[in-house]
Length: 269
Image 1 (cartoon, helix red, strand yellow):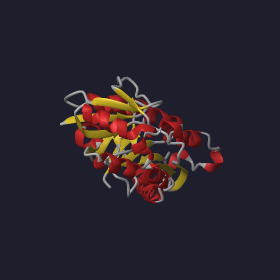
Image 2: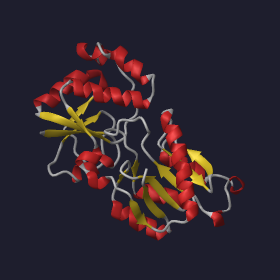
Image 3: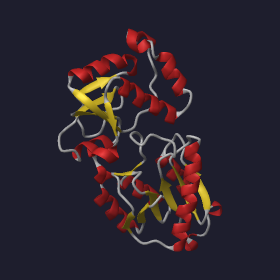
Image 4: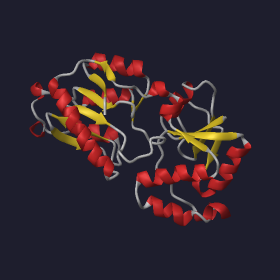
């Protein structure tokens, strides 16, 4: 079975490819090339069915998605006849939000006969199970994680984001379309009067998949940069749903957390 990695921007596609036994066929949407990974085929949404045909011609039978993309501006002049026929279908799902759009993307690939798999299936080492990876936990940290988990679940059910920051039970920020880095920068810029005293608990970043999302695509991702940003935001650690979050370069994450005095916790759902 030949695997194609439908890659987006960032370091995740290369990390995923490095954890596979054989190099995958790499395809990327124009304008969203991955870091450190050669692309075999670039494609545009306006020519989706020629892209499917190219994958078939390359012997691809299975696909996995990794990396960041934004909704592209579509050029009506570039549509091929087959792709033009599904424009109303695409527009309908785009209007319903990210989860609906991603489910539709999976459906289109499956209708073309491709098996769609997720990162947790093909590279399970990137998705840690339950356990404390660095540092130590206090009862306050555990309570903040429980509170953050409830908030993240509520946000996910309305397709808003996949994370939040909680300190001493107070939600300092929630993730929106701007992403985790923007959320942590917002926390770092909060006036002291809006934050509870750090002596009683610095708080944490929490990440989890949305409750209704298809976990074969768009799992939350953490990496060494996340640790650095959490430290800069004055937090005490990072917690996430065990088995539901991709962790890039875990040794570097652990080293950065130890140096900054942060905990890393894959929390049982």
